[in-house]
Amino acid sequence: MLRIIQFYNAGCIKISKDSEDGFMPINCDQKKRQRISATDEKLDATVSINYRQGNQIDVVTRVRYSGELNAIAMKSKLPENYKFLSVSGKNKPAINPLENATDEINFVWFTPPESPFVFTYTVFATSIESSLIRSQIFYRRMGVQEIERVKQIN
Image 1 (cartoon, rainbow, N blue to C red):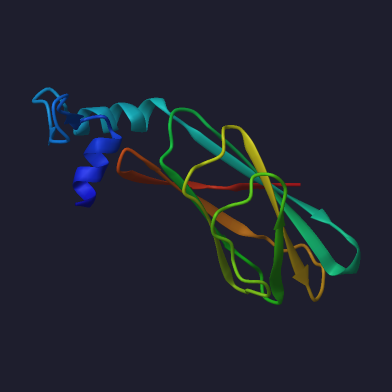
Image 2 (cartoon, rainbow, N blue to C red):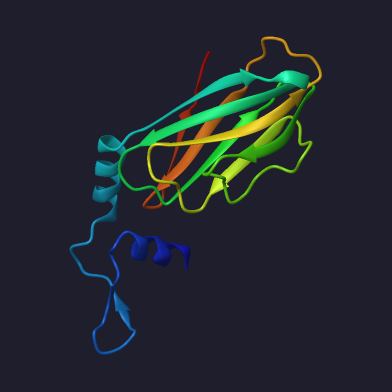
């Protein structure tokens, strides 16, 4: 069933005018379309850290992509003794970590915001030292999942 949905999302399944029956034209080559998508379309993401009072840190993520994305997710690895607090801004993900989550946190957009977009999440650190928050972006184009590392800038 998922394969059929992927073909439909890629525009490969047509609906008959006289009924709700679907059919797939012979000239729909999804593998060829995926290769073009993977080479011509790009995604770039960066994260910056803003320190606030009270050991709170805003993690600002900027994502820029070309082409069409079907879904996007971000996985971040928090340093030891860091806790997730909240997400702010207008581009909030559909799925967020629970408050006080530690270690690995995940964000998911079923409908990605228009590119470029920025979203911010806040963490609490028991001690503010120079610590690296490692993140990866997972995104899906026409049934193909790709991964991009997020570059930390300061």
